[in-house]
Length: 89
Image 1 (cartoon, rainbow, N blue to C red):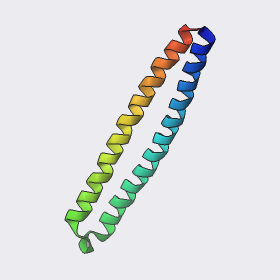
Image 2 (image 1 turned 90 degrees about the vertical axis):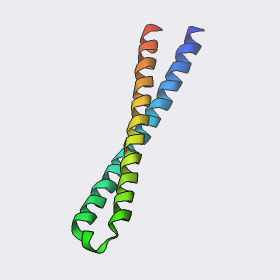
Image 3 (image 1 turned 120 degrees about the vertical axis):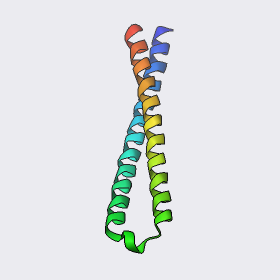
Image 4 (image 1 turned 90 degrees about the horizontal axis):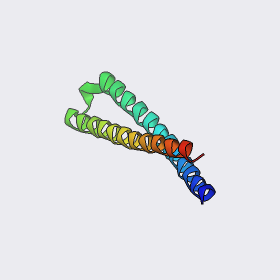
């Protein structure tokens, strides 16, 4: 039973690592988009509809915050599983 349990923990841990990597990749992309948006605003603010630009920037920022929250939850779960795995050996 212990080997099955530790196998389950290892499988869950591997899934969390994949989720973490995915969220990190998404955050990198989101951050690049935010920086690009800010650069576009700095260069072309005079010809853009500012309310639309601000709304789009706020959506990108909200997405970034959501991804950070999800990443935190995954890292917390990984931490708990790592503790359980170390105690089961």
